[in-house]
Length: 253
Image 1 (cartoon, rainbow, N blue to C red):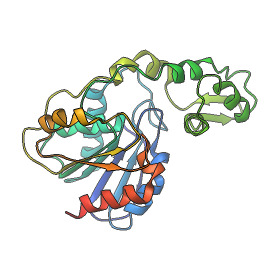
Image 2 (image 1 turned 90 degrees about the vertical axis):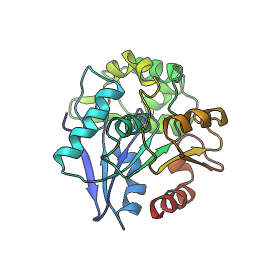
Image 3 (image 1 turned 120 degrees about the vertical axis):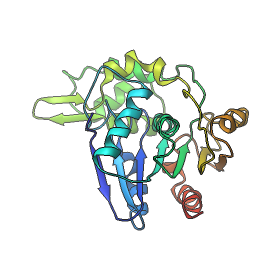
């Protein structure tokens, strides 16, 4: 699958993968900062952003999408950064192709399986009547019945597209809804050699717990884990400066 991507900068290549319900837009601030020293590729994963929609939606095909992208762009020895779902994709690619990358940074996700926990979000998104929708404010009010946090609603509603025909979803909402349990699955396999791997977690997030450190070490020998204070799941957006400092230290080693 040919993924939509944004590119900026020059030098050592860095590939960034967004999380569930996200897109490359979410990483523009980080991408621009990194582009001062690196060649940065911000990707839209399948069924998200401006990339194609497809009924098949799991980490094996998303890792294959990344493999195809790297091959077609003739990218050599990239650094790969993935957040949440993108972190799972990045981990699966890294395990499948251990010789094709030089560093891996996984943001606020562990290699383990997660129970379905997006029920209210999916229920709210599916409940929106796009045919009769007249404004984003109206969509926000309707979604508020299911999602209390204004910041999360704002993030989700970035997936609404509006043109002369009205509103539509950029994300493939039916396929995401049908495959949400698959997106919670754990990593298949483990890295068979020691390579530079960093996990960055938010202090206020439950996605990477202390109990996950054992599994992280089993899957990625000698991986480091850094915690960003006063940050939740969207670490890079909530504590951008601290996140960049942590990431830069890892890149410079």
